Amino acid sequence: MTRKIDIFDTTLRDGEQSPGASMNTEEKLVVARQLLRMKVDVIEAGFPISSPGDFESVRRIAELAGDDATVVGLTRAVEKDIDRAAEALKYAKRPRIHTGLGVSPSHLRDKLRITEDQCLERAEHCVRYAKKYMNDVQFYAEDAGRSDYDFLVKVIQRVVDAGATVVNIPDTTGYSLPAEFGRRIAYLMENVRGIENVTVSVHCHNDLGMATALALEGVKNGATQIECTINGLGERAGNTALEEVVMGIRMHGEELNAHTDINSKEFTKASRLVSSITGMSVQANKAIVGANAFAHSSGIHQDGVLKKRDTYEIIDPADVGAGQSQIVLTARSGHAALKHRLEELGYEFEGDALDKVYEDFLNLADKKKEVYDEDLESLIHERDRQVSAIFQLEGVQISCGTDMIPTATVTLRNQADQVVTACDFGTGPIDAMYKAVNKIVQVENDLTEFSVQSVTRGIDALGEVTIRVTAPDGEVYTGRGADNDIVVSSARAYVNALNRLLNDKREHQQK
Image (cartoon, rainbow, N blue to C red; front, top):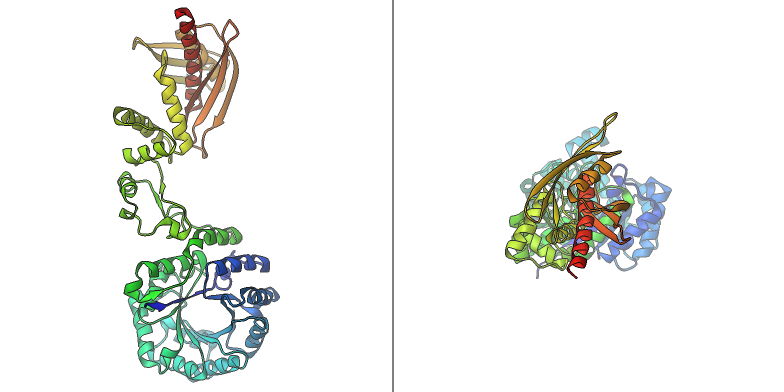
């Protein structure tokens, strides 16, 4: 059996320290409920002495969690901080005080302005003082990633002897390289007496983009708790992302001799919840929970995923609550991806017919960043409209502007495969285009209705035009056309309506 790794979530404390990401008490409670659904082991609910709001958040989350999670209040190595945290945690079923101070030369010299001996005394005192309130006390050795190895051993030995149940080894500035951080954890495991009887925790920051790697290296070398946040939220470049380390452990559990009890199916929901509450957007290519994490636009990748998902996906999207893989249709997509999406929409094309649809798709994809289902529907309908067409639009060109007479040149192909071009002017570009079409088609009609709507989202969306023309006998014919260019859409819609009129007229003549 692999080692159980506790997941210590600090979204509500360290995550909230991210500029612009502050949460009120009610919002923290919403996030806390989601953390409980995810089955996190520990919730760091806040820094009670920092404000009345933080105190109230810790108090209410402590009551909410019950036996389902340990609830933690952060303190400095100061008695009044510890008193306040103990008060906030008074009604918690599983309370923990998290206290500590800096241990690096930088923190001792420039921030705390104390000696190493004074640091050791404060470390021991804050742990012993917190133990008066509760048994579960966690000590953090701030900036341990830049501390002297042997001095760090002295600090951790001192707090273990004082009764700390958890020792937190943070890479506070995200400075370390993974291998070096792993050696630091291993060195503590080898040189601190009794460390095997306490939980060794790692708390890594992402300043160099390596927080997840640092945390996993810590686990590999003996750590049994990871401190992390949803979406990697946190100060500066953020913290270790909860969803990343959990899935990393799941993928490499045997190698790391580790597992967690986290419900990963809640990850996508949790990510969106925290993003919505804090206003901190998640980048599209963010691992595990980003919008593109399971999206494929390359034709080669799409073909592989459609044949067997794990050719390009090491994680099943359903395992993190992301639904299913997304085949994103772009100009890089191949026949397999297009055929798959068309079949999902209920259309079946093979051989030459698929090649023709694919050609039309590429022409559309070259104009758009992404082709949506509605675009495909419109494309297929446009294709169907051309199958029985007497006239097909080959090209349209408009010239118009301030103090200019709108002029249109239209080219149509008839059923005899003859190409005919006509030019005319009008009160506007659409009017000029319709008059040019009438010169070629020469069928009496009255244009009675014109409307346009966007088929899909975005500035590059297809515009679909619907028009109605009335024949001399009073019959009304509807035509539709779609394109990125509204003039082209209008021309296609008008030609489509006239084709319907001509086909109906031909059928009557045959009868």
